[in-house]
Image (tube, rainbow, N blue to C red; front, top):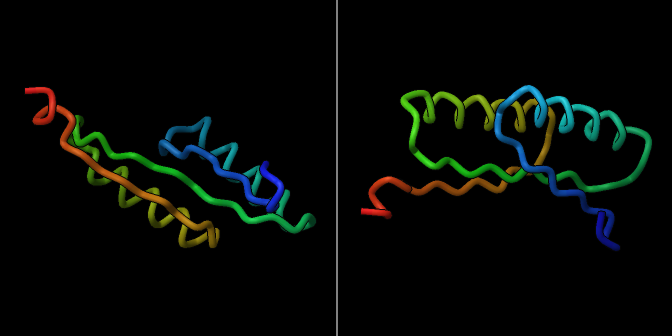
Length: 78
């Protein structure tokens, strides 16, 4: 956490990062802090679009600010 009371959590959509984001969401109910989720879609897997949509829905439901970026990594390395 920085001195502004902001925590940035890397949210992949996997069980570990979702559990951490949920824990931090519960924590901020009692402690004033700003929670930001960072998500990067590498566009590598067939379900990448669905995962990105799920992360967006999760963040909206929990009122977590989402910083999202995407890049076609495979095309970039060619």
